[in-house]
Length: 132
Image 1 (cartoon, helix red, strand yellow):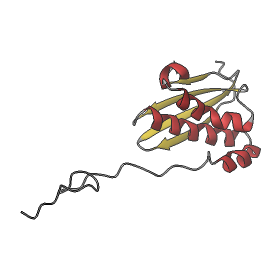
Image 2 (image 1 turned 60 degrees about the vertical axis):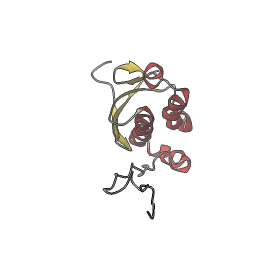
Image 3 (image 1 turned 90 degrees about the horizontal axis):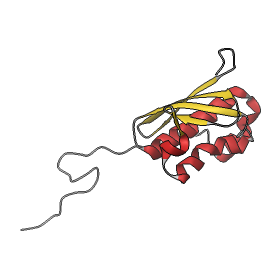
Image 4 (image 1 turned 45 degrees about the vertical axis):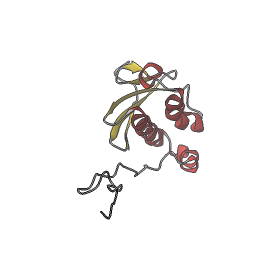
């Protein structure tokens, strides 16, 4: 990659996963942790998930995506990358906001795993009750 190219940066988060995303003008390559996205994510559903913001704005073949993903599992990382790509596309052009917002790609999913409580089997499950 050339040093003088424009690059757009954004961060995405999902569950405990954090993704740092850079967009460069290019032909549509997606690299995650220096590996091809298809090889890294393993599932086609995760691959489609990260392509959604690019397809919604019609920029799939215009930008290369380079990102680092840490924490969580592959599905959480894919969700974090999707949010990061959507936010980076906003920095590219303000007119991308309408299709991204309508599709729900700019909303950060706040759901996280609830912690286990003491005296219980899990976060909410209790041990079986017996009178005797």
